[in-house]
Image (tube, rainbow, N blue to C red):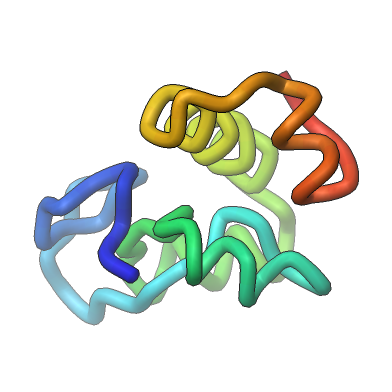
Length: 89
């Protein structure tokens, strides 16, 4: 599914347009759900590596994704927890 967070063709964190990669804002066992629900953003390779290697920006993107889900799908935090197992906001 297309992202419900950002449709821009640049890195969501730094704005770069180089070496863009898709990042699932909820990952691990929730990666497929994040993809299905559109909880993805584009990140440049540098920001993506910092996120996966050092966790830089990870919680921020999870919060953004949760808020986007609640707003877009008109769901409650309880609905989100039921679907994703926890919440971060």
